[in-house]
Amino acid sequence: MAQRTNSLAEKLDREALLKMYRQLVLIRRFEERCAQQYSLQKIAGFCHLYNGQEAVAVGVEAAMRPDDYLVTAYRDHGQVLARGTPPGPVMAELFGKATGVAKGKGGSMHLYDIPRNMYGGWGIVGAQIPLALGMAYASKYKGEDRVTVCLFGEAAVNQGAFHEALNMAALWKVPAVFICENNRYGMGTPITVSSAVTDVYKRASAYDIPGVWCDGMDTLHTYEVVYEAVERARRGEGPTLIEARTYRFRGHSMSDPGTYRTREEVEEERKKDPIPKLRAFILSKKRAKEEELDQIHEEVEKEVEEAIRFADESPWPEPSELYTDVYVDPIWPEKVHA
Ligand SMILES: Cc1ncc(C[n+]2csc(CCOP(=O)(O)OP(=O)(O)O)c2C)c(N)n1
Image (cartoon, rainbow, N blue to C red; front, side):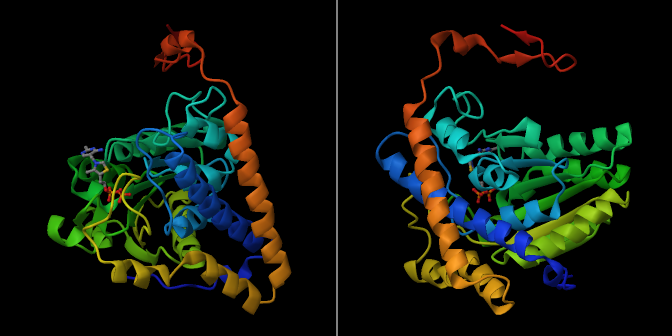
C-alpha cells in the first residue's frame, strides 16, 4: 500500500522548511566538492556519493528527534550532515585526518557521531540491520521512548540478516523503522535481475508489519511517511518497513563508469531532482523569497570551502594512534584496550 500525504508538510513552518532546504544544498555541494577532492587524490579508497538521494536523508532527519538513533550503510555522507555534524570534521575524515569524526581511521564509509546518535557508516551490505534491531531492543528494554531508524540499500534485502532482524523486530515489537533506499542498482546489478519481489515494501507482509513506500526524490513526502512510522514506533506499536524510491545520479562509487545504465535514463531521473522540487514548494507557499534561497546557496558554498580548508590544514593521525580505539570495552566504553 502506498501511503499518501496527510498534509503534515503543509504544517511545517518557514524555519523547518529552510532548514531542510539548507541541508539538501549542503549535502549536494559537499559531495560535488568531494568528487573534486577525490580527483585531486586528497580522498582515497572507496567513496560512494549520495547525489540524487538527498531527499531521503533530509526527510528522515526531519521526522526524527535528535535523541533517536540512526544507523546506515557506507553511502553515509548525507545522513551524517543531515544529523547536524559540522562539514569540517566530515571532510577531514574523508581526507584521513586526525580531526575527522573517526579520527581519520574510518574514512568515507564509516562516519560516526555518537553525541548526535549517528551510529555509522557500515561497509558490509546489510550489517547494520541486526545492529538496529539490537539498538531498538535496548531502548525498549530500558523503557526509553527513543526510536531507531535504519537505512540500507535494496541489495541488502536479499541478505539473511534482513529477514532475521525483521522477524525478531516484529516479534518483539521494537521501536524501529527500517528504510530501504531503493535506488534500483546494487553496484551494476539492477533490482529486476536480482530480486523475485521488486516492490521492496511488500516484504513487510512476511512479518505482518506495515510496509509502505514513499517518493524518495521528494523530501516532504519522505518526511510525512517516515514521521508516521517513527511515531507509530514511539507509541510502542512496533516496526515499519519503508521503501524510499530514489535514484543515484552518479556511479556506485567514484571508480564506477556506470556503463550498465543509459545516459537517457540518468537524464530522465535528474528531472526529479529533490532540490528544485523543495524550492518550488517553498516559493509557491510564499515561505521565503528567491533571494533568501539564493543566499542559502552562497552560505553553503562558503561553509564547504571552509570545511575543505579545515581538512587540508588538519594534521595526519600520529603513528601511535594505530593501536588506539581498536577494541572498546562494551560495558565500560571509556576503557579502551590498546
Ligand atoms: C556482504 C557484502 N557483500 C558484497 C559487498 C560488496 N558490495 C558493496 S556495495 C554493494 C552493492 C549494495 O547495493 P545497495 O545495498 O543497493 O546499496 P547502494 O550501493 O545502492 O546504496 C555490494 C554488493 C559488501 N560490501 N558486503
